[in-house]
View 1 (cartoon, one colour):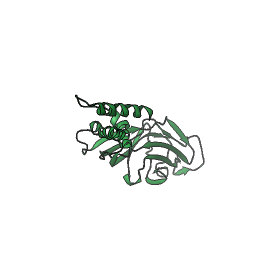
View 2 (cartoon, one colour):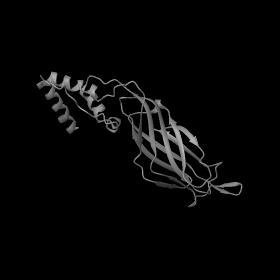
View 3 (spheres, helix red, strand yellow):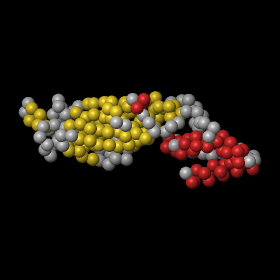
View 4 (cartoon, helix red, strand yellow):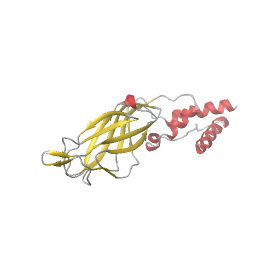
Length: 206
């Protein structure tokens, strides 16, 4: 009986999947970072994001919002981005006032379930024709809230396991797209109704 209930519960995962699961989908995951100002010759900031196991990621794009000191030397200042300890992109922030944006593609081969994004570098000041290497209050880089990672992906087929059901059912993209629905036939049998109750009860305890 228990085997039958679990089998029926797992089969319900089909109802929460989009009709065309093989189609590419997008999901934007915002970082939980607040606006932070980094100062000094060496700057470092860390933030985190997750990738769902049932995503076959085709592209992941990091989007940053930042501002640098108006005295920044654009020829010598630099910022490097790494993921999970691996550096993959460096750039020079422009010497201009106001908010700047930067979009960087993250190599999908470097993605794991939980990911650490580290932003490091140096902001050096202009003093005529030379860069000021001494630490001053004007060596600053402000990373604004609103940074995010945008995923372009295809859903993997669910496995015949209760864990696969819960992963799909509680995934952030599933919830945002209003696909977290458990349905049973109009003329549901006792076993089918029991399976749906097991599913809901199990999900509530996760």
